[in-house]
Image 1 (spheres, helix red, strand yellow):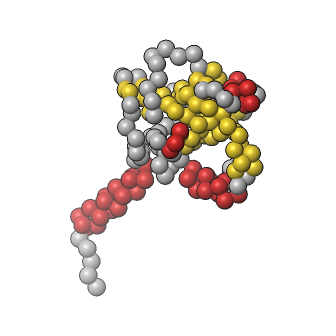
Image 2: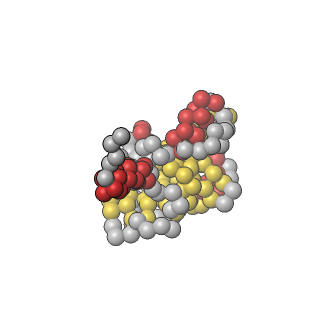
Image 3: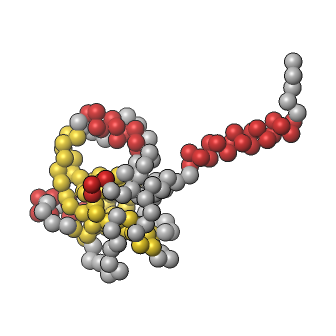
Length: 166
């Protein structure tokens, strides 16, 4: 029986461990359209001064804001880990999925936990059981975390993400 030298085993263990790190590296499929020392804008650039409303306020009566763009602040609870093609926004008990207008941009997959500002439109969406299972997979969530039925969705045209954790 052939035995690998100890140094070679150590090198293989190092590189095998390095492969697992690839899963923790953030995926960035879109470049920011604007960037400063403190934030990055994805989709469209947001003005330097904003008058955002809380997610809780905007979704208190979603029909009031259905036909207009609203500027919202919320915390990113989770990001799609496959591409960054959506995130779950949270403000206290208020939660909504945020997708991106015309699937035209993505956010970095390591954006969870950050307080963001975004511009978008509120929409009610029917979520099938298959779509709910697909979201669970993309979020790497426990099956059944996202329930089928009517969901409140925000379609964002711009997202400002701070460079440092919030």
